[in-house]
Image (cartoon, rainbow, N blue to C red):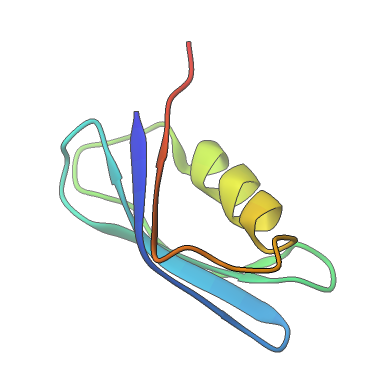
Length: 75
């Protein structure tokens, strides 16, 4: 499970804090024109899940109203 918090979208950038399975905070900032990750801080002791954060942020960026928080579940 992934929780995105403090999601912010500006002209060509989307960014958010993210938490994987109850871990410490991570952070990701993505340029929307080409999907390149501009900044990324992984949560401590977690080696997976950042691809889920990236995919969901890119999906959210296409919405007309960007939510402040989003929970993502995969299996």
